[in-house]
Length: 574
Image (cartoon, rainbow, N blue to C red; front, side, top):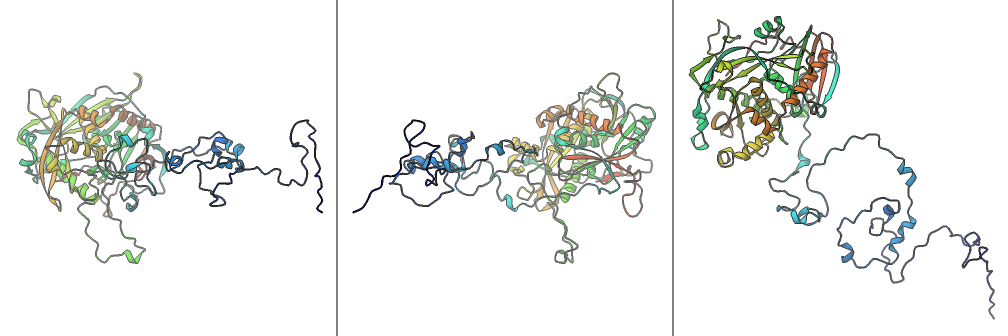
């Protein structure tokens, strides 16, 4: 006969019901293990599901916001009722609440924004858009927006590493580094300038170019004229003004516009700064980036130069170097420079002229080729913040033509600057999504202008600043395209736009006060340095400018033949 032994009964010393938590027998070895309730009708498909977050309440247990399932808010309705006891998995969780609360991030730099594109896996909502934005989603398929497939084939785009505009020598000393976002915060209001003197001769602008349309296009002609682009320190007029102490800083409008529009620039550039006594000279290098015009500098996919072969890799060496493509960055820059010069020479009437107070200071008696239409206005701007400060800048500004009228061009009435935008091949790499000008320029000019303002933001801003500094009343911009997309030697004029520089600056969101603030900051920085030569360099791959101290002999020899630095050579005889 089986025997039955009554187990020992442990009374609760606290006088309550049930066993006491302080008097548990030793045979209960799993007293510290939490108990997860379950239902006998549950189907056990796996021992542990680490990817199931439906019942994971660990975030709410420690006060963190809970995350929803990536499959959307309707999953609980589709998958049936929640399993019995599934919400108790948090009892087995382990948390670093104390450790994580004391953690702090040392690097507080904002993470770069991630480019849009296609994501792997299931899309969020219909059409690749979130469930909440389904009502305002645009048509266009999975993740696509109207106007283009953003992020398409981003993985095939190579990282573009540009070379510096000038080779940085190890003997140079870096004195200052300024990020563009700091430059964008500067501001300085400047009063109207004082006209010192005028030189040169300007021709009348031919108004028939304003009536050109895509159906009445004109060929771009090759006009042989001389136009000088002399640097600041080699200008004989500025040397005379220095002896009269009319200002502290001397420069040209082409150099100053690059500095004033520096936060928009992408391509590398450099400005040579010479300090002699209390005077500063902002110079350019002969053959540097100031002598050419950029193309689609601000486009998301700008034109590229082919990568040179690695001399250390025999597989990359070619017996015969390939000719450069007509759509490479260098070829397009030379083409745009050629177009700008010839359009300015062609769109004037040489039989109607207006002489300034003095003849062209760079045209010697031994010159035989005819001069281009160009007038120089030397103007002084006061950069002083208070009345006691004596910080003045003398700028040599240029105008290209004038519009005949009641005013006198010598007094600044009716002056015009002439520039040109060029179209190469809308389907080529680097076109920046530009529409076909021949089909869109007359019917949808706004779309063409908006695309150019996006792809050439820096170039248009520099042209506008130059026109404002020169006191021009109008700025003429020609739209010039290739006669054949495969031929970069023949061009046609499709249209000409006329606008006021101040109004166009407002459309481009160009702040002259910000530009003057940048100029004043660089001036104060250089005035604190001892006398000598410096160079301000824009980093080729970062939004940073750096100031270097260089020897006085730097940039004096341009080639191996030993020719001196002749800044008074003409830019070109187009």
